[in-house]
Length: 416
Image (tube, rainbow, N blue to C red):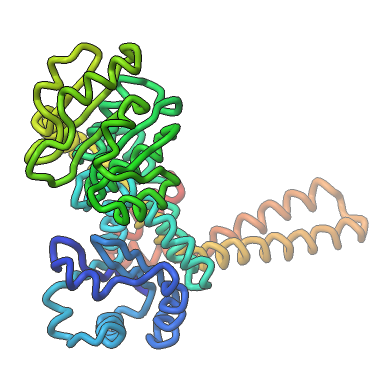
């Protein structure tokens, strides 16, 4: 049996193709069972499917290498030639290396992004529930997750934010330290604001509101996080209630002017307000930065920080790659040990049988009244002779045949 990592990602396939091939969370269990049933030699399987990748990790006969691509092609109504041009395959140790890199965020579109580790964990848990995990993938998953955790804790790969949304929230944490007592107002309801909302929610923000020109869009996003929805026209009257304001509306004109912010600061009795404008064109008038007690940052401020952080992540990635190599090598050693387990068990069983046989003879002699010292000496001599008989014959034959590799191995095994 061999381990195969087969799939496609943001580097090999455009988003419209990735969307077509992706598996939903609800559909994964049945897909895993079908895969196991349809590929005759397949023993184990797990599927990692996210917006940026769909990968199948399988344990099967290496001679069956075309069966998995054929199964995926039939599932998604694609020709084999279409699929072959956008997919990749890794086997055994290379498969382990790839899975560890994926879980560590080293193969992500945003280098070091933390979400992928949780997504890999969920995929493995789904496979375990579906009954398609076995000893091979259990070993691979254990080493993958342990190594990915080491990458996270021992390198700076995920320490510094490299997305605009995360950088904005991270900056808010630097200003306020504890976000669990703060209220945030987000201007817009697009993808960037959605990610900002997600990061703020993860940081335990006390209260959040979404303001958008189209109220229905604000309500849809707000429902995901238990937030309040409002129209942009209501922002000026509500502004004083919020400690954090982050804007990304896509409006051609500013939606928040200096006068509205000045009035809000007076209402707040000069309690500081943190504002980040990540829109182009800008959502917040630049003159707002002149107001005391307002900390206004723009996209350029975040871009400088992101560029610096990305460089720090690249440096950290070099150390992380060494951990990945160590993890893949560890997997190979453990897998070989598992494969030779039957040999080790047979070796021990043979020695145990010899010991029991000689012990039975000695006990029989003692019961017959033989001298105990004589019986023990005979037992030790006979046991030694039987245990070294096979290695002795092997050494003689290896020496006669000029097999220095075998004689060197005997020296290593017996520390001679």
